[in-house]
Image 1 (tube, rainbow, N blue to C red):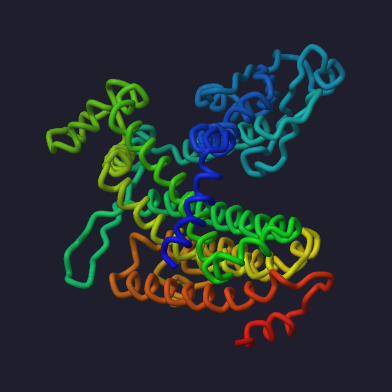
Image 2: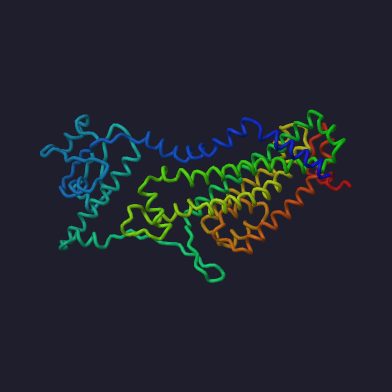
Length: 438
C-alpha cells in the first residue's frame, strides 16, 4: 500500500516541480511581490502633479508670509502689490495657480479659493495643510505671548509607544505589533493563494484524468482512496517546496545582501543595536525602525514564521484540497466543477476577509475562536502568532489536522464512487449518498 501511494506521490511531485513554469514562478515570485509592493509608490510618483509656484492674494498680509516661511515642498509667492484681485483673476495666464483669500480668512479658514488650469488632489492636500498651519500660527501670535516660537518648540513632541506583551508566566516579552500585523497579513495572503491555487489544481487534474478515462485504468492497480491520498500529498509537497525555497531565499538575502540593501550607516546602527552597543540618542535611524529590522533580520524569526506557515499550509491544504478532489471526481467537466467549487472557495475567501478584521483585535474572543475553527484557522492564526497562547496554538493545530483527516476520509468515499460516474451532474444529496456507500 505504501509503495503504491508513494508512486502516485512521486509522480505528482516530479511532474509539477520539473515544469519550467514552476521553476520560474518559484524563483521570480518573491521579486514580483517586491515589485508589487513598490509599484504603488512608483506609480504615485509618476502620477504626481508638477510642482508650480502658487501666487497668493492675501488682503490680511498675515497668512501668506507664514505659508511661504513654513512650506517645505510647495513654493509660494505673494501677488504683486497694488493689483486688485479682479485683475489677477482676469489674467490667470500670468498668475495661475492663484490662491485667493478673503479679508477674514483668519476667522473663517474655509473662505479660500484656488484657481488653476488643472485639478490635482495631492496639491490640494498640501495647500490645505500649509494654510492650516499658517492660520494656526497667526492665531497664536494674536495672543502676544513672549517667546512663542521657543514655547511651541519646547512643547512639541513626537511620542513613540513601545509594545510589551506579558505572557501567562508574567514574563514581559518585546513584540512589535505593527511588524507582526504586516507579517501576518503577508503570510495570510500566501496561505490563501496556495490553498486556493493548488486546491483548484487538484480538482482540474482529476477532471482531466476522468475525461481521458485514465482513472479507470489506474484504479485497476491501486485503490481509489490510495490514489486520491497520493495526489493530495504529492500536490501538497509541491506547495511546501515553493514555500521552503522562498524561506531559504529570504534567509540568504538577509544573511548576505542586507548590508547592501540597508546601506552602511543603517546596517552599522542595526548591528550596534543587536549587540547592545548603540547609543540611541546619537542614532540617525529611528529606534522603532531599527527594532523592526532587528526582528526581520533574525534567521530564527524567519525560520519560525515559515515553520508555522508550513504547518498551517499542510493542514489547510489537506482540509480544502480534499474537498476539491471530491468535487473533481464527481463532475465530468470544468464548468460543472466551477459551480460546485464554491463549497471550498467561499470558506477560503471568508477566512481571508475575517483574518483582516482579526488584525485589529487579535486577542478578542471572536479572533480566538476563528483561529481554532478549522475553516478559518490557517489564515486567522497567522495574524495571531504574536498574541496566541500555547494552548490556543496547540488546540488550533490539533483540531485542524483532525478535521483534515476526517475531510480526507469523507472525500475519499465520494471519490471512489464519483470517478466512475458520467453524464449526470450530482447534487449535494447525491454526494452524501455516495459517501454512505460501503
